Image (cartoon, rainbow, N blue to C red; front, side, top):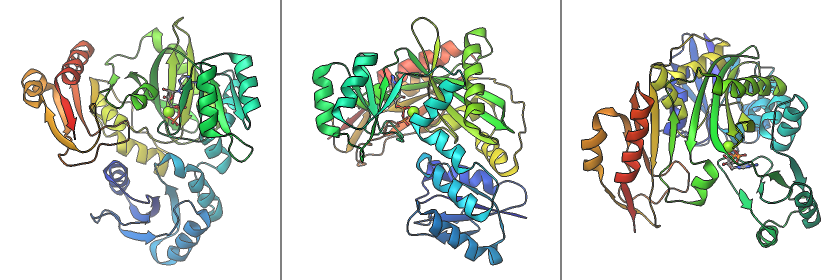
Length: 401
Ligand SMILES: Nc1ncnc2c1ncn2[C@@H]1O[C@H](COP(=O)(O)OP(=O)(O)O)[C@@H](O)[C@H]1O
Ligand SMILES: [Mg+2]
């Protein structure tokens, strides 16, 4: 019996899918490390902590529980913001898994870009900005537009596209960069935005998947009415994805992950060349793990668990379907009052829909790019999925008041 400690401060459904997957592995006793225990009894036991970012507190809670619950075989978690804490806890307890050095390389976007560039992986020019003067000098070097964002953000938090001098003045007024408040500046990369996921074992990607975002996350966050789409085309074996595969593998090796799932974002620039946006050593959000499961007709939550708990990969998996997810949102603010067009959408594309989460009347409008609900469609033909996605986002309308 192996005891796995899963740090999940406020375990919601998205996290619980990973929790259940680890619970389903053979010979695992699963201990939740939480701030607030989940309602379903999904863990074999629960340790509560006060501060989920305090590695010292987590390590001492686990150490105290080990005589009774079992020595930690792994300490895992899926949240981006927790990855460095998890590494510190592992170090304190002498548990296998990504070190702090590796976790930081994946977490700190400036360090990540330095390492990627040094390994020949194409990335945007960047600069850590700690004063207005540093911002203007960076713009002098790369020109407008630029992107400003936190050096270790997630989910497009506090991310700005700055197009001209007035825009920069306004952004600097808001951000007020200083040595205590450093902001990351990046040259703006134009092009189509995609993702690239892997299951990596022993530093080698054994499995990969590719998706395309319509449009990119920053446009989605800046336009809270856009019903956007993640599309996994059925066939990703073509040479048009060779460059993404190469930079994906090189990025993982540059940052030093051994076992786990990675989620990289990359741009196809107008001239066809590829640039990496960022890479994370954790499973993707935006339903992409579910979408990947549907595309390969397998359980990718479990595949993540096998990688991080057992250092194992059960593939190869065959990509049998194209899959798309439309995120349901709409113009306006307030609470969801209605979802129009569901019956028409059901009539037109109903048989292709494989999973939905419908916006709940009365729920406050979500601030996340995942919107208030989603519809997932799958079919062996990519064009059929594309058309269905288009019909859904044209037909369904979430109303707020
Ligand atoms: N240098 C850049 N050029 C163009 N778009 C960018 C750039 N940096 C970020 N973005 C946009 O902002 C989004 C969020 O930035 P990202 O670096 O992925 O941080 P996060 O961790 O918040 O996802 C990206 O998905 C992309 O749409
Ligand atoms: Mg991102």
